[in-house]
Length: 252
Image: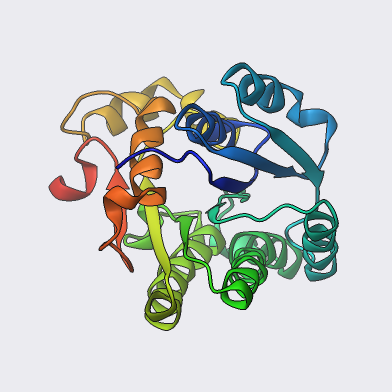
């Protein structure tokens, strides 16, 4: 039921962090991978790991914050004859800043990537599945901030709250036609995006005290959930947000 053989997974933000880990996990579960990031050069590690798992990795560059770049990306995917049926909508950005210091440029950069870009990637992905009458699975990388507020992260929180709403709306619209849409809500994982937090020992101690399992997440902790949501094992699961957080949300 967890076998992804015969499938092709499109992963945005695939050069590092969650995107890279899950792209490799999809390959290990049997799927070929279409890996997308701003730079092709940065995806060599992902491509090599997917190849080591015995699957094909097709690498494309795109700026997910730009709709024209997304349209060009899917044109290239179509021209290569690739048919994707799994999407990990993962590309994202964050910058911590007091809310009174947030300017329009920062707001637009975060929302354009995390929410607007995610929507148009999902739309282009789904339109091809609907056109050929195929089933598929979309997994949106949401966040703890999809459900709670975090100081100094207002644009990010707005984008991830919006992504949860988008997940539910798209699930309601597309599930009757065979496209399931779910989200994952990672807890505290150490990635390049979050590294600044981990430089503060006091912050680490404070956060660990809030996580019932007593540890931060490892990227591999997310892979099983994503493979489950991509596979037939979750055939009756749609419109859901699955927190992968060591129990954090259950104890807030």
